Length: 185
Image (cartoon, rainbow, N blue to C red; front, side, top):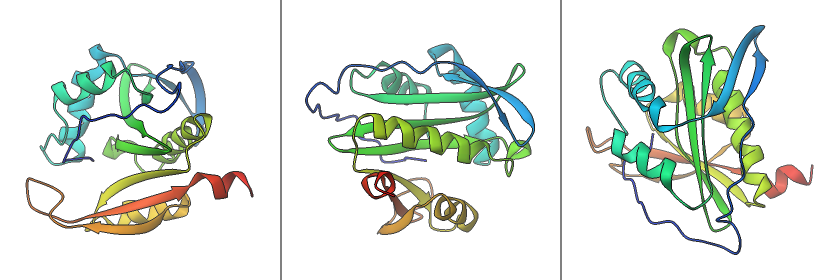
């Protein structure tokens, strides 16, 4: 999750034109889920997922989510529902030729089923639509499991960001997926 949040967005060319995400039903690990764009009414569910996944912490506030959802610059925020229950979400925004995953979380009882991987792959496609060169994210230095998942998805470690997480001063590991290399394979 992104803790040191910078609301500065840069425009590049006609990138401020929003592309809409079509809600869809998908099968992940033999289970049917609905994937759709997040709307402001969903924020209470996102906060509940954060509390569950991050042991009571709220890395993002309602205000942070609202500001992102209302940004004019290209961004994509998606959630996953199993019937009426929101089980996960992801967010991504663009900076010049780069895309950055701002947050991703899946309820503990749904982890390990491919939902997070599916969401990250959706963000890869989103970034490629805008001809981004790379997709990046931060992960806690202690979260070896998440790092392993990201590596399996093609991300590589790039930088350690000291004392990145405000609540405990933990370092973050920045990881990057090179989209240009992936599209030439």
